[in-house]
Image (cartoon, rainbow, N blue to C red; front, top):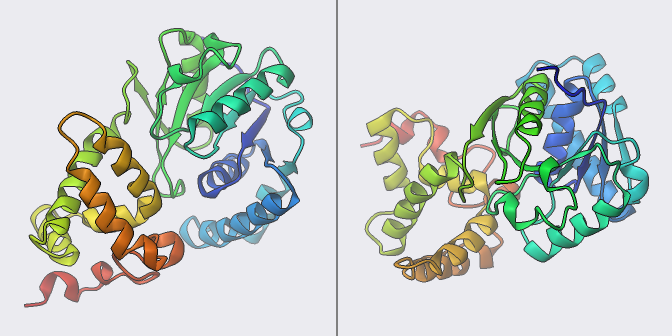
Length: 303
């Protein structure tokens, strides 16, 4: 198969993940436009990109020249029609709210080039929820990036029943082109692959904590000592972001047999969120950052 060549990529939404997606694309040598709602939002995006500069210099040994060239390939827009002109691929990285995403796709369908592929980076939704409103269901799919893209290279690609198989292949080729590893999800599945395995793991840990069976450090220590993992479930939760975890707990609690998670969500809100402890993003969560206790040599050896 001759793969479609993506020359211009647009990332709609420059939040934490959107900024990381755009930076990785630019770092890999491609032109990218970050579209966001207004100048204030764009200013915040630029701050996030400056953090990426530091991270890529430290974690990937990117030279000042490489960092400069990366930033030269990033441009910004607050007008959607202007942003998507001549775009080949548009990646939506907006908040996990159905109405917000649906409204965006309705607007996007009116102004995007007919050849453009649309992709949602949604973590908790499936592409079939938005396929119709995109106006081009055969050219629409989900590309689920992991946060901390520079170290978590896995990308889950999931179409819906109407996605053209060639579009999936083009997108997988693009993901490899930007230095990441695509995993194809063959059927629509909430939670994709990784989260489908990870979520029961972290909710079990949260339930042990909520029921006062053991404290977070003890639970993490047990997991890390038994498996050799570099962090336990509460370190992972801090990395995900505790606000997202809270909303996902509430959503999951509506599923049959999962009502007990309401109490877990309430404890998380009362003991952490209400204290402005959101995880790594706020430097405080179950651990304190940038040097959480589980990274110290004593964490696993303390008697």
